[in-house]
Amino acid sequence: MDLSWMAWTLPTALFWIGIVGCLAAMCVWEYFSPGGSPRVGILRFETTRGDRLFISLLGSAFIHLAWLGLVGPGLWWAFGISLLYALVVFRTV
Amino acid sequence: MDKTYNNRAWLLVIPVFVLVALSAIIPIMTVVNYSVQDTFGGNQFFWAGTEWFQDVLRSERFWNAMSRNLVFSVIILAIEIPLGIAIALAMPRKGIWVPVCLVLMALPLLIPWNVVGTIWQIFGRADIGLMGYLLSELGINYNYASNVLDAWVTIIIMDVWHWTSLVVLLCYAGLVSIPDAYYQAARIDGASRWSVFRYIQLPKLRGVLIIAFLLRFMDSFMIYTEPFVLTGGGPGNSTTFTSIDLVKQAVGQFDLGPAAAMSLIYQLVVLLVCYVFYTVMTNVGADKPVEVED
Image 1 (cartoon, each protein chain N blue to C red):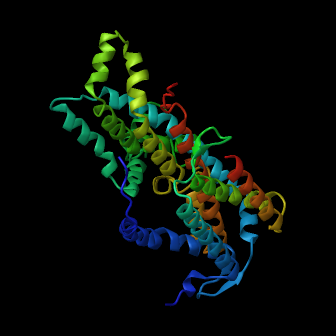
Image 2: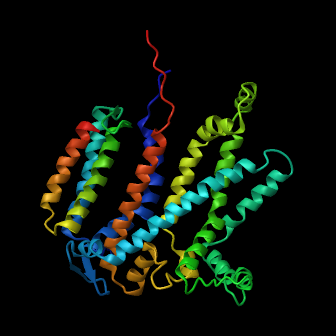
Image 3: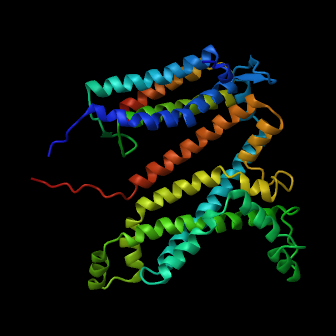
C-alpha cells in the first residue's frame, strides 16, 4: 500500500509512536489495575488516569506551542517541562 | 448486583474505530506530517521543522482571525442560549400547536449553510433584498459589503436565525422530559414562576444545555460557509475568521505546510475550550452525593 501521500517523516512517525505507546501503556495499566483509579485532586473534580493523560497531552501541546511562539525552535526544554508537567498532573490532579 | 464482564464486547467497537480511523485519525496524522514540511506539489516534500508553527504563532493575521472567532462565539452563545431557552419555555406542551411549532423550529436547520448565506446576501441588498430595501427606505445607511458593523450584525443575525432553533429543540426535549410530579410539588409549595425555572427546569436542562453549549460553541468557532458566502471575509479582513483564512492559505495559496500548522493550532484551541466548558458545566452545581454518617 502506497502511503507516500501521507508524507511520513521519521520525527512525525516517532511522535505518533509515542502517542500510541502512551495509549498502549494505559491499556496495560488498566488491565493490571482496573477502574481508572478515580480521585479528586487539586482541580476539585473527579479525574481518572485517562483524564490525567488527556490533560497532560493537551497541556504539553500548549507548552510546546508557547515555547515555539515565545522562545524559539529548540524544543528539548519544552519537552522536559512537559514531562515534568505530566508528572505533576499524574501526582496531584 | 455484580456486573458481567465480557471482553469480547470490545469487538463491537471495531467498526466505529475503523470509521473514526478513516475519517479522523489518518487525516490528522497527514496534517501533522504536512505541518513540518513544505511542498510545491507533485507529492514532493521538503523538511521545514517547526518553522510553520513559529510563523503562525507570530503572525498578526492569525491572531486577528482567532480574536474574531472568539468574539463571534461569545456573542453567539450570549444570544442563542438564553433566547433558545426562552422560546422553548414559551412553546406549547400539548395540542395541535406542538407539531406546528416543532416543524417551524426545524425549518432553518434543514437549509444548507451556503443557501443560508445566499438568502441573507440577497435579503440584505438594498436594490433587490427586502431587509436592505426597508432599511434604506427608513433612512438607515445599511451596507454589509462596505461597513464593518453592518457585516458583523448581519452575520450574527444570520447565525441566530439559522441555529437558535437547535438550542430550542434541545431545550424543549429537556423540558418535556421533566416529570409532572416536580411541578405538582412546586405548586403545593406555592413556588413562583421564576423559582420553578431556577430550581426545577434549569437544573433538569443541564444535560441538554451542555450539549447545546458545546455544539454551538464548536460550530460558531469553526464557522466558514455563511460569512464566506455573505461577505467573503470582508470588508477588508473584518469578517475573515480562522477557517476562511485557513482555506485561503491551503486552497488559494497552496501553502499546505503553514495551513496544516495553523489548523493544528486551531484544533488544539477548540479542544481546550471544549474541554474546559465541558468540565466546568458538568462539575459546577452537579448533584453532590449525600454523605450519610453512621
